Image (tube, rainbow, N blue to C red; front, top):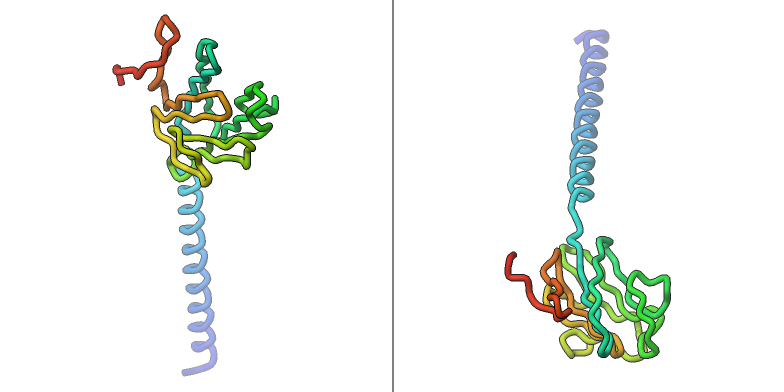
Length: 158
């Protein structure tokens, strides 16, 4: 083969290689963008807490963020003014498609269904969380409602 033919074949091969690499990178970029859009489109299911403090009427609080900190500190998402609760007592966080309860090294501990937790634990609708003397009933997307007498019961409409 002559020199110009070999040079043309080499140039054609190099151009083909660069076109293939560009195509592969564009395809990967589209896949990454699509996966990112799917991950951001996932919605965090709202969590509701019915807060029972002593003989007071229960309070129902709804949260739509992926992390809810319970504690005495007013900066917490769920502040509770009680001496037996630490300033940052416990955290409810949504990840891996579930809500998790974690004790934040509190002095008096965090209890899930009357069992002390030491590791992050999955919570389900209807679980009872106790921090100090305050009890929280956990519900997802409106599972719990208040009756006219302010007693907590399961909503059978869902």
